[in-house]
Length: 177
Image 1: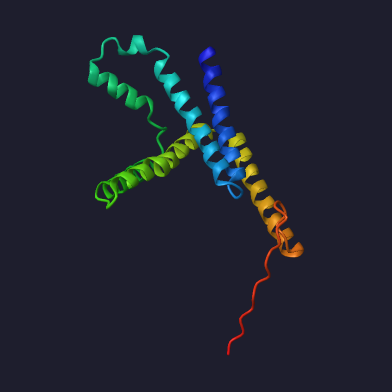
Image 2: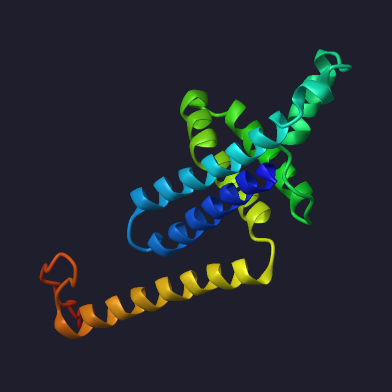
């Protein structure tokens, strides 16, 4: 019973992080990265908890390689149709990182952006089980799109930025000669 409560808490944290990420997507890259990191944190916390629940009983008869395989399988995402294409894409990007002109910067970008995106994708697959959660996610997405569109309309009609109250420069019309 306690196991299910912790996993449900992590699922709720993942859903919150995903919904908050999609809501702040048009507004702030910093908030987007923060909520994406929160989503990945809850995903990893859930996976680590699942691995550690009965670790002494499951791993007592395994050798080191078997224990490593068990941990690797514990972090595996649920099976889906995009699993194999994502593996191939990851391999292609990693090969390009190795042969890059700046391998250190490329490796940093690989882990900083691509792997984070993959983990957010895994989190989405893990937590968005059921129609209720998908509807909630789509509601946040549509609310964000509506607010962004409304913000654009306000900027167009009033001629200044709604949040920062800065003047918007009018577009200059260039007449052909």
